[in-house]
Length: 430
Image 1 (cartoon, rainbow, N blue to C red):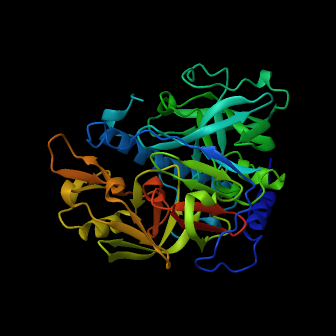
Image 2: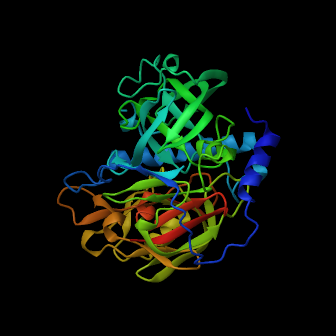
Image 3: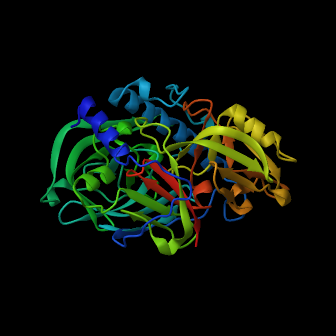
């Protein structure tokens, strides 16, 4: 287990390992040594009939609030409040509305679209011999957890059996997270070999959950693998990718996502040049210790007109709806012709389905445009001429100038997360 001083040193060394300043449009170098992990995704926030799935959207927004609440709790414990993003504060636990309560080497990994565009999942193994799990890869958190064989509430999922692995052992400590439906997930800590797309991290500490939240009972993924920095770890340990780097299992200190309806993947230990064209435009992280994949100097445009500027963005593969501070979201939608409030409490807006705006983001270089299809979350109701937009006004506790961009944005660009360069990069999809 890391002490605070060790954790700070680990994060600082990882982030500061490249002393060379990053320039815009810096070309990437393909070494051909990474691992491809296919990802799979099923659907969108729209139902099969094209109607916006309100309940799923609300569940995601509550989940995001509580995920980043827990991140700030972990960050305060591991590093201290000085590492918080500007203006961030720990909020009260968010709860579901009453009507929803009680329902409950280098290479590439293929990803699957799960839960109607709410998750991107792929395969991993834990232990020796490897036990297989379908995992949600999340750049907005830092821990790995899967259900353990003794979990009575986890029977819909693959279960980790520590007695069947020759390389694992239980270690001191525990894991617990609360959720907005009043339930929690908790369990013990283990270490074992974790393999993602052929990249193996030996002695990786993870949580084996013996009590699973009702929110995960019907989730198609078995657990979560966090790809954020150590400072966000609930387990106060080195996350998978950092362990793999330290052990030399990943040939480069970067990983990359392509998210699309088909051919999606996570690439471990570099980039996959066949999936993008041109240069990768890198942008420095705004903090060396916050633990987030956070970059600054962002601007947003609607129909080519700038509507917001000089804000920070956290790139979070574990989210779908773009979230902006409530005031910023109101200003954004105020610039969209025909926009009106759909749900004030959840910060959701609608626009006429036949005139969805062209929305784009920039960080001082190229402009990255979200397709109207991806930005359209579906009709407000059957027969309606209005559709819900995939940007909500929500206070995640991350400050008044920080937006959260998830897969709604990430589908518009090849996205690279570089520990070596302490940066996030974007490239045009091939």
